[in-house]
Image 1: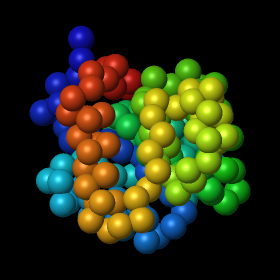
Image 2 (image 1 turned 180 degrees about the vertical axis):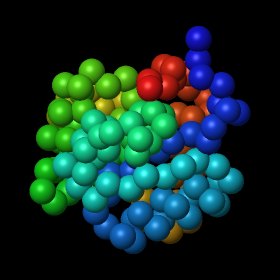
Image 3 (image 1 turned 90 degrees about the vertical axis):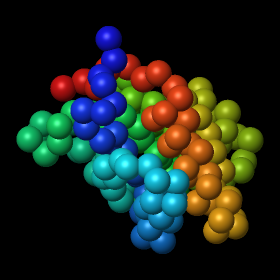
Length: 147
């Protein structure tokens, strides 16, 4: 049984340290008319604290994690590794500037559900955010939201 999407807006955890990219993701969601609740973690430690933190701070685990690779404190690959060690069923989309084959191969090995390179063009970037979120929250069937 899946959680009815109409009961609450989808929850997205964006793990991104660049304020400009955070704002572009917000704009991409607005541009695509996707009503989602966006939580932002500036590094891997903050992301894991959010996922493990007191339930009072959030209703449930997020429906989707958007994860940058180049992060301070705890970089993206280590963050992904730790998310998967939690046996967390949330889809993790790596959304990063790196187009390196080594990075792509490693994050899939670590359990990423998808790897997307951030487009350099503003309009493409905004549309890309909409397509990513639209697919994962609109088309793909996700596991029920864990309490």
